[in-house]
Length: 500
Ligand code: ADP
Image (tube, rainbow, N blue to C red):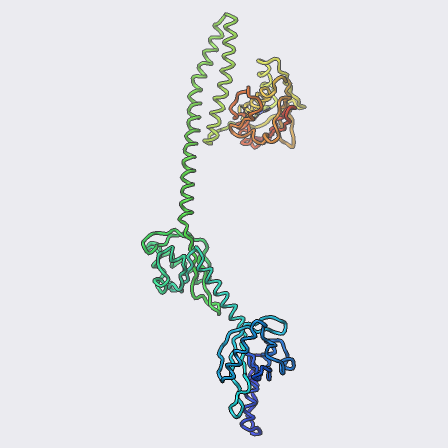
């Protein structure tokens, strides 16, 4: 039935007696009620059953009238009925008794029932009328409210609500703990009570946003506790709307972030400490290698002079050996200096156009000069290959790769250098037939100070040659990588864009 339609109360007509008219009005009210209205005898037999009862319990009038009221009473509540009947029989009314009844399909309905005795003309109680209201929705709402209240109370975050004028209207347990005010003390007070004076402006901004219907998420700020303590918080604010959608206030959730901030500060402090130490170490390496370079250069100069002066063959051999060791030492010191330049972001290149084939040939000659037992061959179809790069740095990379190929190939003297052009890029490969590298170690060999321990304990090194090579190649826009098989050998490849 349409609830908004005017009620179909029969017009009082002159044809009906007053009693009949009253009867008709009552019948219309009963038929139109949203509450189930049921009457029954003292023995519990149903005598009337209105449309709302049909809707609420699912039994038609024919199905219900004449049956015992236990039809709608769940078995575990049967004794309630005896109590009600005995009360009604004594002429008492039972008001808003909350219980549960059962519909035809077995579902349970929370109800509020009011039961009144029905008397006959002589005043004798002959039965009872029941007005039954379905309170499931109300029950659900209160359950939900109870649940929400429990969540709000058990939250570790402050949850408060306030009007648009800033008056606090609710204050949970966490808020009491965080700010030291009890709910009693603070509800009804203005929210500025917990805002440090220099942050009052924030509240104006927040209220402005909330009034526009906007939410504020994780806004980091500071609030003031009752004892004056400042509490760093992360604040989320949402508008509260009424049934009509009108914004009537704001709910605020505030999380104490002091611990988080302490943690962050501690991490930042440790990071700064470690970084400062690391910077100091790099600075020291840079300084030490720089200082070492000067005497090394003059030793080199004196050795050169010495070699021209010495006539004795044995002595000349010693001078030559010393020169070779000095060269190794110079390379180590230069490499260290380069590492410190990389760390300081000061590694510079001077780009020129040059023939990389020429550079490779010269490096091979230089290596073969001192070690004529090495068989280093260049495999290429190209007569020349011009590129734009820093020739000294590219030579340094080829030198490093060739030095490694020799160092990590004990007993093998064959090395092949490949030079080709691939997809417009220059591609160089240095292949040895030495000890190789285990697959799981390959990805580490370009890391700073990394050495494959078991590769050869007799070979000394600092683990920076490949790190420098990678830095040089990638800073030229190229790529460097290794292919290797333990016991078979390795190929170290690098590519360079033709224009560097
Ligand atoms: P270093 O040779 O001074 O230790 P590198 O950076 O040049 O430092 O090389 C890093 C590590 O990679 C070496 O210690 C070695 O274990 C491994 N390695 C480099 N080249 C080869 C190679 N051709 N064959 C086998 N292992 C190699």
